[in-house]
Image (tube, rainbow, N blue to C red; front, side):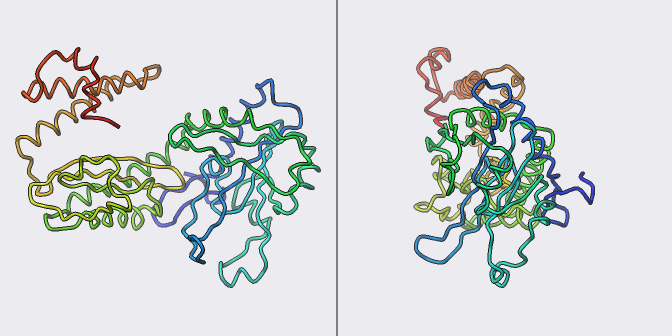
Length: 366
């Protein structure tokens, strides 16, 4: 628990207080790795661009802003339209904020001074975006390490920082992505605290849905129970992904719940509910899927499938340890499920042959 004087984030009440030193440690880890890289020259600065404020299409409606993940990992700044720089050699950090006119206070609330932002963000310095060129020059920045790489899940490119005057510096966009992405994979104890909190809140929210579900309700009502619990009790304003509330046959659709199928079916007596929902707290995500009967009682067939999946989950958790291949764990889950389905007469044949034919992917295609 951070001290009351230490810069930190929380949503108040009983929500988790996250010390801003979480980001200082992330910056230190990143700089330590960069200093070892032969292509990182003297006078190099990491430069990241935060998420940009936007409106819904051509309207003036402003969606709730959520920070760009790499930027948040390094700086923990919630506000849009910011940049952040880190001196690789000495690790000092600068956040650049937009200079807003005084009249914005009428619409947006208190405008913080740069000095107040230093305390709020827990960084070494805060300057205005319009002064970026001068500030970086004063600190002898010669090379800007920018983020350019492809997200292996989405296939999309990361947002590379750019600003008016960047042509005054040498830009290297070939080094940062791989190193910072690997740093994000390995979580610090402070990051694990946030992840545990987000998962605890989501777990309790799932249990709240289980307590309140009844045949005759709509799937979206289960979604709203989850969302309300996470925000009301955990301060989690965002979900980590679109909520999937599949009941009956909808549980077989991997990413049900999208705009074309918006969790709208009526829950029927005898349905299995497959709920895949997770909250996000301070840009750290949870991801929890659970299945249960809407009326509280498993049928004999439902028990077979549920227990097969449960057994595969337990097998993977028992086998997981440092050095184990993720692919091997996936195949272990497949094998366990196939063995259970065969044991209950749903499959016939040799399980090894089923594995070679990738039959498991038929039942677990994700």
